[in-house]
Length: 252
Image (cartoon, rainbow, N blue to C red; front, side, top):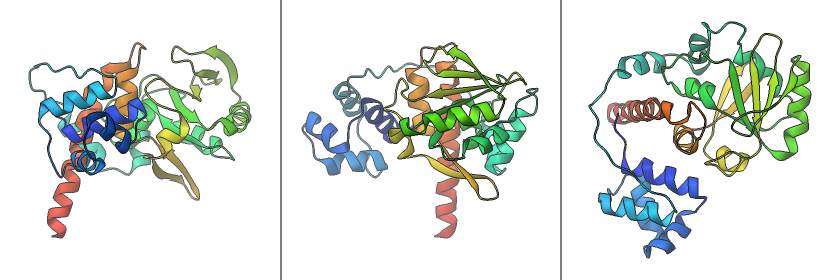
């Protein structure tokens, strides 16, 4: 797994809820400098990245681990598929779990961003979904619409999850976790800013959290999974960036 200083800076700044201008003011630098760092146009030294994290109220921990490229071929295979097929491929071994059908029902009048394992699958990560849980962060004004959709799916409220989300249990055993606020983020509008709109059926699209935002959510998680999926997310982001760079060179 590798990561770019640009991606680290974006993830840290968003987790702190700061604009580029606010971070620049804390560092005594210009907004254009922060923009160049985050775009990858200019590569800051490690000391500057650590300083930026401190300005965000965060600690950047650095360590050494054996290089692991085990995800690469799996991610490459996923990225060759359309986003919906990526999800279906990783969900097929989980009995009673059809996240695409659940999302189609939720899209009626509700504003939300898909997060968690399903969002990772949409983005191309290689890990089988396993746990039949669909996680979404909703706009406050959409909370009632999501509840109505959950009831149309035959779901029953099942209390609060470890992440503070409202849990809805379907007869199939699948779960819908609905959050308004979420550790590591500042709610729906924060995630929607960088979310990707993905068509999942004719005339039906959903917003899916970006890999950078999934990484900051995972880094901030206190649940049993949490940081377990950070390496896969970083590896997927790296693979996406390589594909984009290869496409740009081919176009040139």
